[in-house]
Amino acid sequence: MTQLGSDKSAYAAAGVDIEAGDRAVELMKEWIAKTRRPEVIGGIGGFAGLFDASSLAQLKRPVLATSTDGVGTKVAIAQALNRHDTIGYDLVGMVVDDLVVCGAEPLFMTDYIACGKVDPERIAAIVQGIAMACSEAGCALLGGETAEHPGLLGPDDYDLAGAATGVVERDKILGAERVVPGDMVLAMASSGLHSNGYSLVRHVFGTESDLTLDHYVPELGQTLGDELLTPTRIYARDCLAMFEAVEVHAMSHITGGGLANNLARVIPGSCEVRIDRATWLPPPIFGLIQQLGKITQPDLEATFNMGVGMVAIVPPHAVDEAERLLARRDLRAWVCGVVTGPGPEPRKPVRLHGQHVVA
Image (tube, rainbow, N blue to C red; front, top):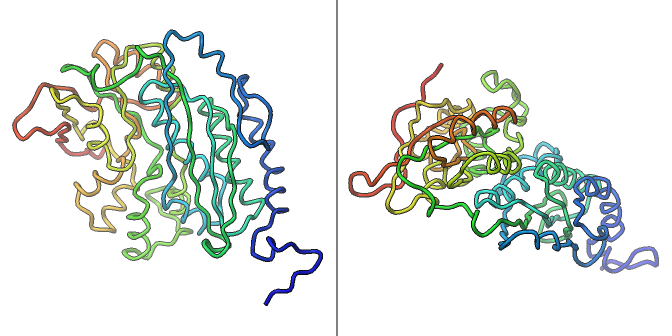
């Protein structure tokens, strides 16, 4: 039986270190301050984050949008490499880019980190990544929670999730009802795997391959671990700039389920989309996973983004200006398909044809 001395609380003896939690909060403050927007009221440490919504009165009919997500088993890669300053970036990307596809500007985000034992420096590194990504997306990190779960999680284990809120004018909401035959499908390059399919990735590299995370892979130009921890691209500000400059009918964030399944969510029943694989070459990591795991192309495409992280559906007259705008923002974009009327039965919202061509 553990004896509790005067210098150790019962809670600490049970495995929860309040002092470590307080130190983690202190280490976070500098990074959280970098995400501050003028609408934020007060600082961290309260029971709730406060955001002045009076500016929304300038909109004719403001509609709030909300999204929540995590990063899945990509955290296992961060933990294996003991590198924790990018996984929070992934979290923000997965959340805010789900908001922007309806046309919404992300306003603020909150996070939740559950861990087996609070390591202040590790928690601060995670929050640093979250804050850097919030700053990139233009949204405030309004608050969060770090919970210690001894006995449920191992001392070095953690998981994280987040939620964000955004706003859009009611008559500017993007979606399937705006899509018509003749619209063009504009693909935007991903930074790699993003944060989806990591259960399969870990299976392939853990059981089907001799490659280790510290192994340098020539075709990747870096170690396997560096490739797998490449942060998710954040498209929010790029897309918002595009909305201001050109007509956009719909957007699709390409996450779990791949290009076809995510794009199908914004295609009306009266239309289909034809995607030409020959318009781009996926980054080498996808071919490596396919080769080592002996994965069929349909399975690969149903799991990963294949190099396309975001898609915009725009009228033909908007294509050139959209591509130029995104290029100026250092985001590669290209036409990968077209919206058509109904194809042969049975209906498929998205049909992929052709093959990726090696340059």
